[in-house]
Image (cartoon, rainbow, N blue to C red; front, side, top):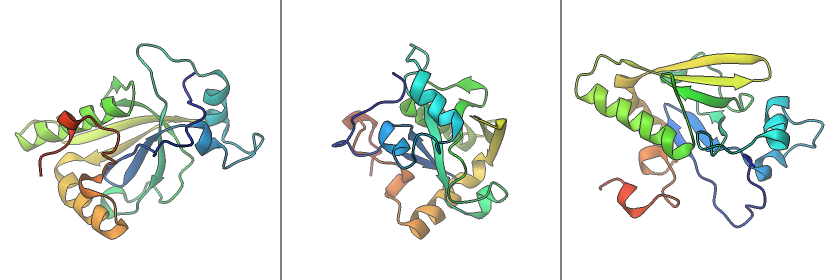
Length: 168
């Protein structure tokens, strides 16, 4: 099942990039609504989403922490769109999304031509794209983490393997 159930004693995984808060969709998240009030695209994943080797988690944007880097995308709860791809590459899970974003940020730091990160997302109302300028992300993430009290490097580390943790 693509949407895990019974995760009561597990801390939520999340990743923040430019104020976009990414996290796996879970049954516990959906329990905030009655089944008839849930966003249809989330309910469909809950009822009929299947794991595949190419898709092991449904990653949503659970909210947007307002900042100048994400101006125009609204803030707060934005309907929990499901992330389909990052710069055209379909994502498998949260680790894969983090890896893609980190790789794009590293390429930009080395002078790559890639100046934007494109997040293709899907909702009941259809697909759309969120775009963030890569070179502005370090300063924006620092501002956002400070303003909203988010852990260093804007991600949760409790679920990451030791070798994936950032060097301090």
